Every structure is written in C-alpha cells, then in structure tokens.
Amino acid sequence: MIISVASGKGGTGKTTVAVNLALTLTETETVCFVDCDVEEPNAHLFLKPVLEGSVEVTVPVPIVDEEKCNGCGRCGEICAFNAILPLGKHVLTFPELCHGCGGCTLLCPASAIQEEPLEIGVVEWGQAGSVSHIHGRLNIGSPLAPPLVKAVKNHAENKPERAISIIDSPPGTSCPVVASVSGSDFCLLVTEPTPFGLHDLTLAVDMVRELQVPFGVVINRAGLGNGGLVDYCKAENIHILAEIPFDRKYAKCYAKGGHLVHEFPEIKRVFQDLWHAICVTTDRV
Image 1 (cartoon, rainbow, N blue to C red):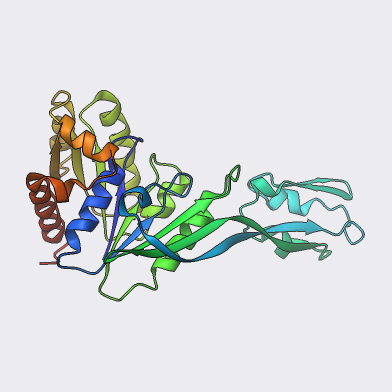
Image 2: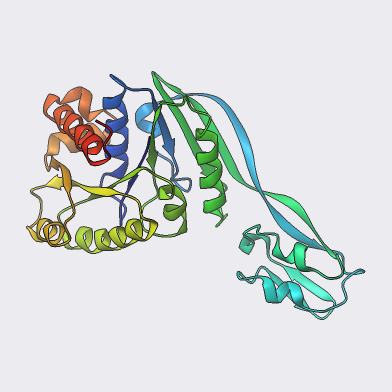
C-alpha cells in the first residue's frame, strides 16, 4: 500500500504527519519511508537513518554533430521546453531545460543528435530502526526534480511486498508533487485552519481529483484559525481524518527533532485513529 502525504503549501506539518504516521505503523506493519521532497529532504532529521547506499541519477540530454546537421530545424519544433534551438546549421542546447524525452534524437532526419547523461542528483537509502528510509537529493541549481522523484519511487519498489510506503511529497501542486502523488493508493492532504491554508488546500484537492487518487484531510494546528476550512470540507464532501491541536509543546518537540507519537500519548492515539480511518476508507479492513 502506498500512502502519499501532500499539502498545497509549505509549513503545514506535512513531514510531521508523514514521519509520525510511519513511526506509529512500525508496531504492526513493515514500513518504508520515501522522502520525495528532493529539493529539500528533511525527514532524515527526525528518523536519523543509517545510510547504506546511494546511486547517481542522470537524464539524457542532446549532443549535436553539426557536421551531420542539415539545418532542417525539426529538433526545435519538437522540443516543448525550448531546450534545443536551431540557428541554421548551428544548434544551441540548454541541458538545464531538457526533460530527457528523446524526441529530438528520435526525429532528427540526419541522425545528427546523440544523447549523453547529465547528473541531476542522487538517491540514498538506509535504515532508521525498523523503518526503511529512501530519499533523493537534487543537485544545487538543477530544475529537473520530477525525474529524480521518479527514481526515488522506483527504488522504493524493491521494498517487501506487503510493506506500507509513506511518501513525503514536496509542498505545492507543481510537477514534482504530481510525480510524487501519482500512483498512490491514498493521499493525505495536510493543511492548517488559516486563509492561506484553505486557499492552497483547494489547489491540492483539484490536483488529487485530477489524478483520481482517493484522499482525506489532516488538519494541523487545529484551533488556530476559524471554521472556514471545516466548512469547505463539508461543502466538498471531504473527510477530515485527523486533527492535531495547536499547542506550543508539540512545536517544541518538532523543533528539537523529536517524535510526537513517542512523547505524547494523546497524539499517538490521533495517528492510530488516522491509520484506522485510512484502512476503512480504502477497504483495507
């Protein structure tokens, strides 16, 4: 089973929910934690895994042999990302814009385009107690997060067959988030009861509905704002699966890298009930 944890905006407590749900499940399940926030992975600060291995991730980028090029311009026409620009028989390439689709290489009538690998980041894995941990780290300056996200998820497919995968997605609703959430059995949307939280939750809801991934909402810092968030969920027939109260002691625990479910029994019950709600929603029970 694959459970992705996403949010329309940063700072809602997405990683807090993902980490503490994973720790709760270790009592009864085999758990694999997959940190797909490759631009700023931080779950390792809480789980503290011992890394056991790593692999570089590359994407193919075009290299043009101008002696073979006939100047037809077909490569520029096919590229949707403006990563290749033909100027007569002189062709400029922009590897940082290339998505590695291979279209220019495939459709070049003169066979003047070859591909070479461009390193964009690394996938690392290890063990955090009984939790298998996998994360990706995007190279500084690289805009190509989705291929690295997919590489992280592909590595997670080597987990035991009945393991529960918890995917910590990037914030927002852009391409890296879509790559993280796609293929999930269920998505937890973490939000906060503020105007910004509500606004960005609506974007996240549109995203998971477009992806046709079942989902529910977790309200973090419950009691902080007004009832607009609850009213929205009721109007949209969205299940609120859990609420984590707004309390300074929980924030202090998070700030020092602690585990809420280990320090506060009442929060552990929240996550146990959350897992039960997920199982009921997905007919796992």
